[in-house]
Length: 110
Length: 165
Image (tube, rainbow over all chains, first blue to last red; front, side, top):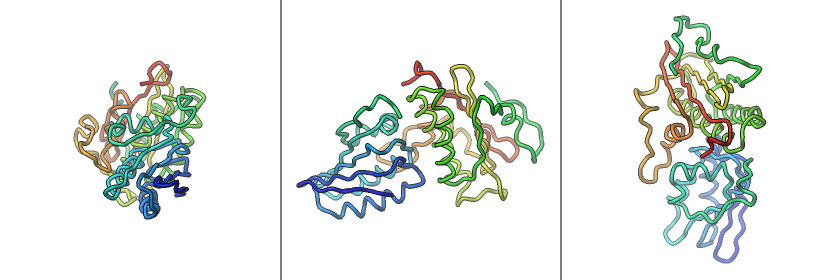
């Protein structure tokens, strides 16, 4: 599970450098997120623009990360591709997460 | 659409599976209940149907199949093991006009009565329990039968972009 992090002022950008956020990596994703959240940054932006497939295990792991956010810090999602946006929409988790935007070129599918 | 009546033969694949076996126009795979094997099967599934489906329905097919296979690993084959040694999950997807008909057989524990029909969106902020709800949302005509020592699940999805939602 590869995560790329970049701190810009109070915003910690975390990019998931994996094509699939599925049952095979859900636990590793949660563990890695907990590790990188040790860095500062009041707002954490989780960039999913490289993730082309997510299942409910990946969704569950993302919910676990949201629930583990310390008080005073927020989690936002960015760069959702159609296959990822669909999972959030169908489970209505799109109303729970703050979603900044879709991936450039979304609507093309993949 | 009901399942065909199955013969009492514990050694051969269920006839329901054989009936849908049309390699020239579909996709078949056998796999162990393992997340990396599931991933490989889904990647192959996407490659097979990419030319035959629009991107929206291709994504829906991959997600529905992922949830079915993950559900088997989680509930039918707990701890990565089957009741019977060496058994595999068998899956088949065939094109029927504008539909994709999927059949998944496994030899794991039986599913609880009504779990596919009654799958609801879990309340609150759960970290799991979305799988069968997603399947019911994505697929049409979800049918489950316990046949001898096998679980047989059939479901259909749209293929053309007209059914995308």
